[in-house]
Image 1 (cartoon, helix red, strand yellow):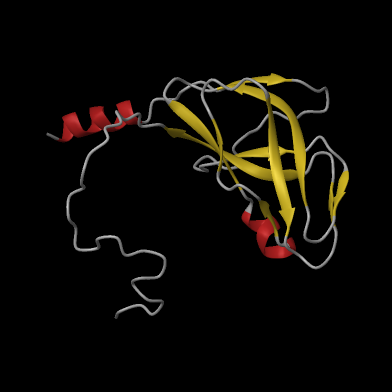
Image 2: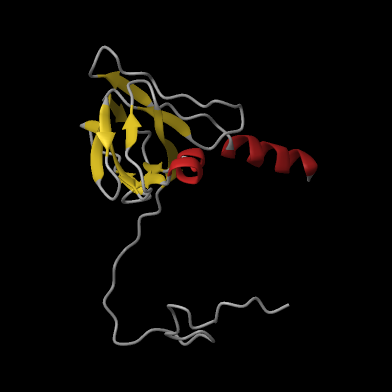
Length: 161
């Protein structure tokens, strides 16, 4: 039994290949900073000011070819969010498997001061995730659950201890 578990776990951890094309000479190929990181760092090729309350498209100078059955999610960097209130506007941004254009990141400045984006700055992280495809069926009703249609704060804001 233990042997079968090890085999199935190793199959789940098979490395998939992410192909990256540099579109600009100053582009930096994304990489994992630490062995067990979930996200690859995306780096700016732009030099621009991001005024308070505004958003801008930041170019990375790369395009990608994702492994079959995956998507790339573009997510904020926690350090930029905490220290400067800079985040990804449409988080997580989705890059579909068939997209071959340049990877761009929409940053927004929620801070009170302007923020300087510089060439070579880590601006976001890209997480490669599996995609589940579903068949779509229109129905006349849905199954009942204990939650029902309660949402948007229906469970309150205080944790039940």
